[in-house]
Image (cartoon, rainbow, N blue to C red; front, side):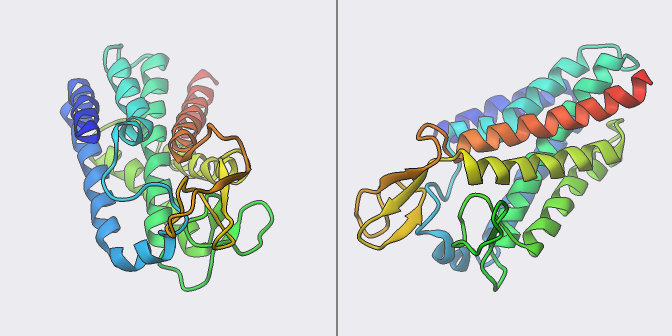
Amino acid sequence: FGGAAAAVVVGSLAVAAGWPWGALLIAYFVASIVLSRIRGAEKAQRTGDVVAKGGARDAFQVVANGGLFAAAALAGASLDPSSIAAGVLTAAALGALAASTADTWATEIGSLATRPPRSILTWRPVAPGTSGGVNLLGMLAMLAGAAFIAYLARVLSIAVPVLAVVLGGFLGAIADSVVGATLQDRRWCDTCQKSTERMIHSCGTPTRHAGGITLVDNDLVNLIATFSGAAIAALLVYSSRAA
């Protein structure tokens, strides 16, 4: 219920900014749902011991992934479209959504890879679903997800440089992996001798803190990623227009 309510609020803000923004948000959610259903049982089996959340999104997940996008889009829509501020806010909105899309696509598609992911910091193999784990398939999916938002925005006549959005989205998703590998709470199951993000492991054993910062969970990491994507895209557009 909380996720549905948050989605209504975020969606309403996006539509208030203009129907193209609402259509873009719908496309993001539809694509995410479709990708999650592809070999969903297989992905759940691979990552179930690690990921803390699965299934439907809760309120914080919705806000972390779409809140900044909707707020920046609405703020930009209230300004003179020809102003630098409007262009920067538009880029921020698209960069935030592109980062969220890139991260989501990397997770859903990268989880299908036959080889285990590797830590973005040490390049050592890690369990599927581990925050900060990447592979080639997932990296390509990151780029595709960011490009999906950038080009769809162009189709919907939302004016912003495509390259700025693609770079913002891709680098925002990379930031997600780096923060996930360094700051996110990591836990350990003494019974299974396995690393996890879950407070209670799938075996039923309470897990203990094993690294990172306790209060930094995957939702907060996603929020950091969307802010990173927004900041990078906005900075690129500001630099190009102020020059």
